[in-house]
Length: 110
Image (cartoon, rainbow, N blue to C red):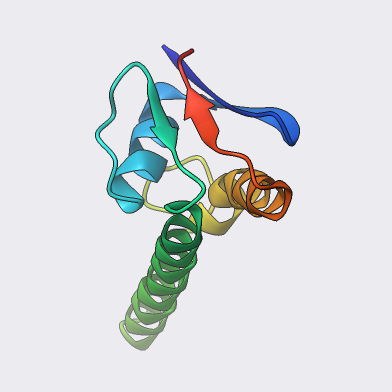
């Protein structure tokens, strides 16, 4: 399954199911087949995504430091595909920002 996040203000953002679930979980939405992020909810969603990115990067830095201290080579990314949360979330955050600036909601599955 794919998630297609849409807004009347910007291009669609398409994500694989696991990545779409992750983004929705971060912003406190259920990973339902369809839903909406209202204009009023967008600022909190952006803040939650940015906080998750910072937390993820801090955890990565700690893991790298611990591995280096133990004389090991740290993994680049636990998921194994080398894509950081910042990279996965960036298009979605941009969609939310553009939508907020235009006064539009973001929907998926409709």
